[in-house]
Image (cartoon, rainbow, N blue to C red):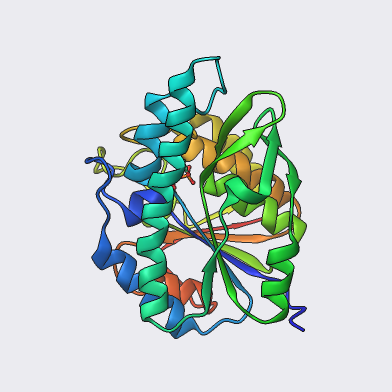
Length: 267
Ligand code: IPE
């Protein structure tokens, strides 16, 4: 039985896909990340990945996040968005399996139900059995049924926060396409300054100032990400945000080594 508190790794959609083009994976990066995960050799890891250019454009096209508006085309949009996510998940799974990681995907649309976009129900039976036998569960931002809205989008960041609080995670590592959090968008502003360390108070002050992501993002970009992290940091869980597109940052962060990025702690 594996009773260890999990380490949760989020692979951001901006890192594993090219957000500038619809449904464009970055397979070289996905492959390298699988190599880093294998090298870290953790038996209590939960992986969650985002949607990037697979999830967001289809979800936006059919207005999935805001719920079912009695428009039958939305039902196809829900199905298509889920399918796009399973295609991206398949690529992530290909890389993990190729690296001989006992990874099995769990589709959030099949075991989570929300109410007004917040998780109301999670069937954890499969997850618990996986933990017992030391598998690596892989979840992803997905469309889910919602008891008030009909359906919505449950982001990878919401999943990370929910699982971290539920299972009292040891720590969270978030891999993005930038080396941590910056005071403004480093992709458009060369003067952008990185935050090396943030405490809860600083994170709360920063949250409303952070911008939306580039490209289509139905789940609120960086500001949305931070909003999800606040309760996690409040619970005393350490969060590292680092670059996942190059180097060994994910391996280093998973194995408690210093990385270029932002460390977030309660105090
Ligand atoms: C989005 O998940 C999933 C869908 C749009 C279906 P995330 O919000 O976690 O994705 P990224 O990491 O921002 O791309």
